[in-house]
Structures are given as C-alpha cells and as structure tokens.
Length: 220
Image (cartoon, rainbow, N blue to C red; front, side):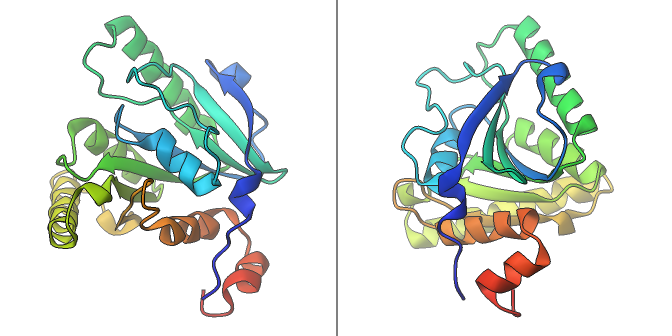
C-alpha cells in the first residue's frame, strides 16, 4: 500500500482564532487535533507535517488560548485546538476555552474528524473522556494517538493500548454511546512510530474517493 507522504508537508499557518467570528470560511474539509496539555499534541502535528515548528511546542502547558488553523491546500486544513486539563489555568480562561470549543464544534460543517492525543503512560483522563463523549454524541469520528510510545517497551505499549481500548468502551457503554467511531494506535513523534497509520487516517477524512484510489489503490 502506498502512503501519502507529501500532502501535509504543505501545511502553513493561516490564523489563530480567539472567537467564532475569526474562523476561516467553512468550506472543504478539516481535521482537528485535541488533547490534554503536555500530551504531545504539537509534536504530533509537527511530525505529521514533517516540519519542526509548524505548531508551537510550549514548555508552559495550557499556554495556547486560541484555535490555530493550518492550510494544507485550498480544500483542506489541520486545526490545533487548545490543550485542556492544566490545573493552573485560571477558571476565567477555562470558561473562555469552553465557549471557543463549543462554538467551533457547533459551527464547522467542514470538520470530518478529531485526532485525540493521549500520553500512553497515563490512563485515558477525564478531559479526554469529555472530548470523546462530546464527539460521539454528534457522530464525529475520533482517532486516538497514544503518544510517547517510545517510552514503553513493545509489550508494555500493547498492554497500555488494550487498557485504553477497554476504558473507551466502558465510557461509551456507560453513556449509551457507540465506540465504533473511535479508532486507536500507538504513536511516537520522536521515533515516528505509527506515522504512516496516522497519515492514512487523515487521508480517509480529508481526501475524496478519486484521490484515495490514486494513492492507495482500490483496496483503500
């Protein structure tokens, strides 16, 4: 199977939106990246785009307070959502983030899926579960990257993935939601573990049928 290696290298920062009025035109297709502060979200974006500093990697978790839009081409975008779950974030800022995120999810018809980054060394946290539950409630697909997989052995990584899968299924069942829209993989920005798999998932969301067949063949 051929892998699309060049499309996301074209990604360029377009704008940072602090409110719905600043969102770019709602056309084409976009995929959003979400995750707890310090889970490796910016690093994952940079790795997928094969760029060192497309998304800012902050040493101060919780610093990003806007939604950053990156244009891949005229028809496609990657979107970096504010990190959540940082304890020192003031309540007033968290309230602003909640409003911004709500406006984004409720208004973007072009949003095709969410890439949720979660540190493989931690259980699926409360913030991740809230994000998952919300996405599932509006039938939005979620692809989970269990980041920093290089920190664990292969066996420990597989065990952590199984535990995460069970956690997601339990959460979905308890809230009468379907976990069928959730997929999951191991990922490492440092070692590029799982990079091809992540790109393939983005392609399925953002490319049309003819483009997918050209890259992957009929067995896409």
